[in-house]
Image 1 (cartoon, one colour):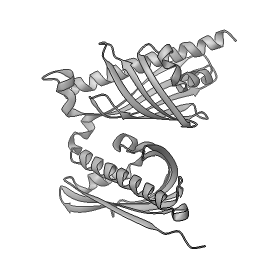
Image 2 (cartoon, one colour):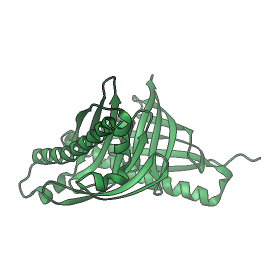
Image 3 (tube, helix red, strand yellow):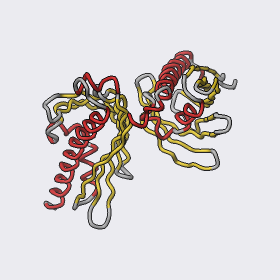
Image 4 (cartoon, helix red, strand yellow):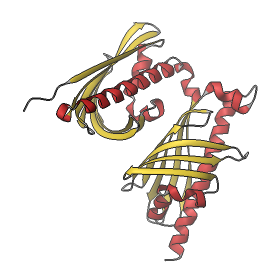
Length: 318
């Protein structure tokens, strides 16, 4: 039986930022869901000695795919090599490299190489992979360029925070409340509408209308990955309100001997050019940070308290 053909692609982008900054963005895969549009979630399974093993979820041609990869990080060469251990169909294998080339003190070139094989080498499957690879590579390279070229502002534009409640009850009903989002329009007052698709068990694609304290309604679209064994739900907003350039989050339920601690964690990159159009002339970045923190925290805390009430009510009627 003939060997499958190895297909290769190459993409690159010129970036007006130091090579070290670009390499820092490429090497920090755990933050890719916040940085890169196609990436939904990354779990670091192993790390050490310049190597890491990752479980990754990302969109490809509008569908969510998951795979496990090993990466070799060579900081001195500003190069990251990757190879998928288990690929998602129709792939039978994929690997490649991120290579950062220094072009001067504040300029660099980022090259992204892929090689892949497809089961049966069916032309339609090869074309599907080439289209997904091209779309995602262009999106990732463009995003690295945009983030790296404003690296001096990136820390100020990024915020992470969490809200926590204590539940006197078991973890299972809390997790169930957070997982079963199709019920939220009738259970969560600030949710006006929610459309849900779950073609792969535990991978939820949803669109939701939420109402803020001032009465305005924001439409968001998200992909969620549920981990029932650890009572976690991670999500990536694929369509965000105007003030947010990117938004990822985690719902986690940690049980102990007397109940459970339930936490909602958010990570956000603000869209600086939207601050004044959204908040008014003269509005500052500090005001935008407070606004987003309060708006997201208010809705998250309301949902956490509803989950708490649900779990404690379930305990009371047993």
